[in-house]
Amino acid sequence: MGDRTSSGRTGNPVVERALRRRIMSGGPISFAEFMDVALYHPRGGYYMTSPRVGRNGDFTTSPEIHPAFGALAGRFVTHSWKVMGNPTPFTIVEVGGGTGRLALDMLTSLARTNPAFYRALDYVMVEVSPAMRRRQKELLRGAHPDKVSWRTLSSGGGWPVVGCVISNELVDALPVCRVVMRSGRLMEMCVGVNGQGFAWVERTPCSAVSAYLESRGMMLRQGQVLEVRPAAAAWMREVAANLARGCALTIDHGYESHQVYRERFAHGSLMCYAGGMMCDDPLQRPGLQDISARVDFEALQRYGKADGLTSLPLMTQRDFLLLLGAGQLLDAMRSAAVTAEHKAAERRALLALLDAEGLGACKVLLQHKGLSNEQASRLADFSKPGAPLDLDALQTASPRPGWLEWQGAEV
Image 1 (tube, one colour):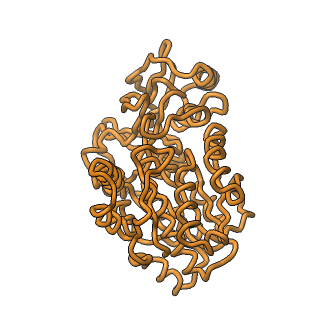
Image 2: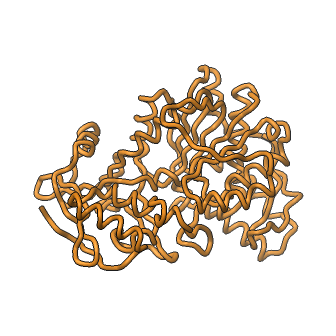
Image 3: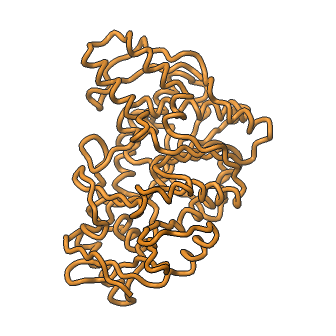
């Protein structure tokens, strides 16, 4: 057994006490358990209290950058509705919707560009964080008072959704186990107590982690670290169980399995953020810093297939948004009737969504269930979602200074 890289920086007292009690009563815990408590403890977890999201927060997601992200995603959802024969109601289920910006921008765009679809819509937010639910309700109930509701997914199904299940940067926050190769032997990196802080403790991997690695045929190099996410299988099972007919749209930071052997992932893909800065120790400040790890999208495809979901070819966020008209939007901005400074700011924000080294590198997984072969073929062809984007109504947006509302064309 090894004891490595201890941390002494303090975190949320409630979370630290909960972690210490678990370790002292039963010995070292998996990193997945540590991460679950640090992020989701009901009285102190990072996501359960007041996560700082946005331009001045700990991290920024695409909906916080520019409303075009939600409007373009809305064009894909409209395409899905038409492919399915315009069912009413058509339910959009967004899981882990953060501040509610994606929902706001999508609904605002659809109300303006496709009122018939907007009338057919039910928008459901699934959110475990009380703090985020409050922010979502403050943002959405004023703008779309009769359109949005909040509920939970059922692991056993029983909620026959006809529509689309959406998640953006959700799966990377599901807890992970960590393994490392030591002298030709695979070890699980668990968490123990070391003085006033927490420390890595290596031991034989649990059966779930071993089974995952065996099923993938993965052979790690000496010293290589890998994250394993058992919760991803349960997540895909919930999506499939609750989706009767329609599609699932998953956008997240991730990789395909062969990429795990690249040098950049030699020490794993874990990322921690606090105070707008990246942190290098996931064991410090539990409850006060964000923790995430890249998503294995091939695993999501395999889990989905086992539960009745058919996956379309994986693509990047950059390609997804360009297919939906982001290029038209950039072209039109050159002639927009705004100041040069304003125009440059808008262009920078849009390019950030397409940045191949940043958010544009996020992976987009489209899966469907209950569609005919003809409908599935049409779903995959969304490269011509509608008329050119109309920017005549370009104007300053609020409450996001420096970003603009824009008028999208109906799909």
